[in-house]
Length: 120
Image (tube, rainbow, N blue to C red; front, side):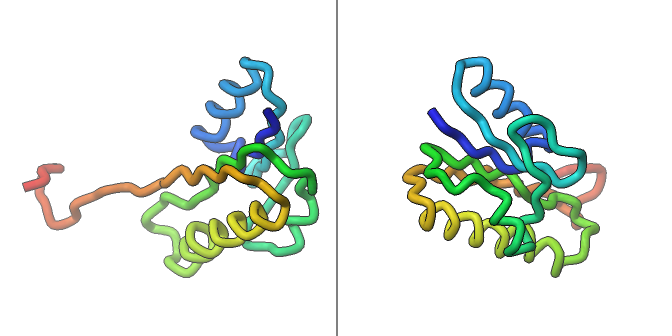
C-alpha cells in the first residue's frame, strides 16, 4: 500500500510511519520542524507552493496529522494550519485521486474555569 503521512516529525506521525513501514508498506512523509529523512520532504501546509514537493502519484491512503495544539499559539496561525491546511490537504487528495483520507484530530480539552484540574 502507498501511504502519505503528513507530520512524520510529530509523535503521532512518526508512530504511524514506523507502524506501516514495519508491515512492508511504502510510506512517504512530510516534516516541518526537522530535516527530511529518506522518503520525506520539508513541507508547510500553509504554503500552496509546497504541495509541488509532494509526489503526484495517487496514494492509497493519506493520513493527515499536521496541526498546532499549543493553546498559546496565535489563533490566526492555528486556523491557517489546522483548518485551512487540512482543507488544502483534502483538496490535494481529491485532485491526485486518493480515495482514503484519514484526519487525525488534535483537539486538547482543557477546563480553564476549573480549579485543581477538576472537571466539575
